[in-house]
Length: 406
Image 1 (cartoon, one colour):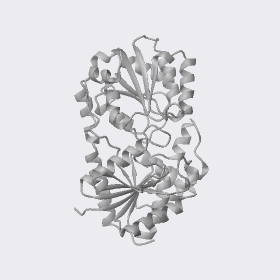
Image 2: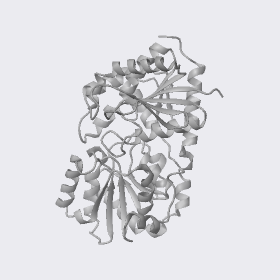
Image 3: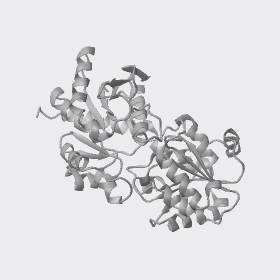
Image 4: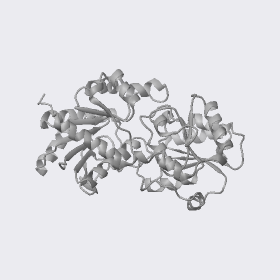
């Protein structure tokens, strides 16, 4: 098949950002892993993103045939996404300027998130090449959860406006496809469902005793929660559930993620753990590098995902690939990832009591737990090579039916 040149847009968040921080999570992993898998196939990928630090190199090699291109947009450092919106036209011009400077043409555009979709639509009109996008999260869906900061009217309106232009939209689940059609008036025929993936080489089983020695942990029961520290992730209801589990001395909860000691949500959660009387049994690991996450997953008896909303659920894939069962809210792709009653449990309700029941059920049946190899095998179809195959087929299909200039 033809080797492609792909302009990948992740304008607001760099694939090399610190995982677990405010704007760095599953989407960053997705962009990085997909781009590198495409590079392994001989395709060339340039990932355009905003420069976040003064003096940052404009061009950084990420892996074979994959580069990160940093764009100077406004002031470097932290910038709220709504402030970045005012710089999107500049982002399109900066991409075009770099392209001209390099004498480089692209076969297609693949954008990620609503801000990048806006930029991708402009570039599509200039370059007359196919544009594929993935929103990763939808404002209206997040708002419907009724938890945390409400998404702005600007984002709500813009998501609906930009959804009509790309040649193809990639949704991670069938449910997300329906939400795109209902909330953004996107044509169902232009939406393909392709799940997220997992790096099966990185996330693989390690003997629990060995993993715990690396982290200096004892031999009690360990519950793990991984992700950004924000209300939508449901940490408060997990804490409430944990507080009702009887205060067993050998039961610990480890929370991995966040911006570190200065994170206001971390301070809130620490305060809440004291209020509930569980502070001594809860450990905040802070931001954990991707390469160390498998040690955390393999140290745990179970990984709990109490989110009110997920577009998919890469954490569940990572945990299961390490052979560690998952207890998750029935959101996003969890029903497609977790085999209920075999590789974990899907929580049917929405309250902390519902999560407490699921955790008790797991602990009571932990002696019946399936071997890590079986749990891992249940997610083997989500390996990045398979996901990249599906994405590249979307690329080729878009090129075959390339639309005339609009």
